Length: 77
Image 1 (spheres, helix red, strand yellow):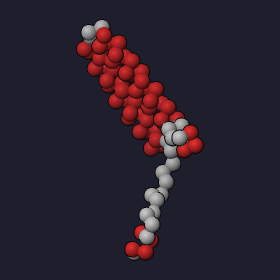
Image 2: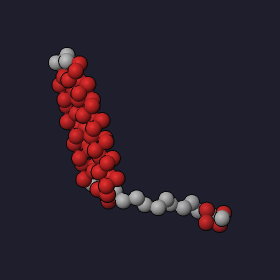
Image 3: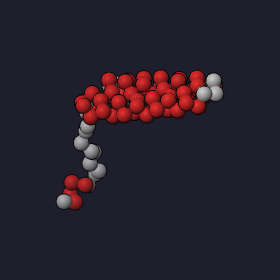
Image 4: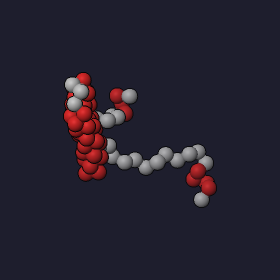
């Protein structure tokens, strides 16, 4: 798996870091029985996904590859 460079991009690291912080915030407020803080942490998790997606669209994610061809697919055209 290390050879595939799966997820080793600024977009992935940033999105996961923000989502992890949101998870920690929501977990802490859940234990403290504060629903508003819990939902704020859930919102932070969603922001992490959005930030990671935007950064990926800006070119900071993995480059898109052409889909692999199935054996015999080239002869179907």
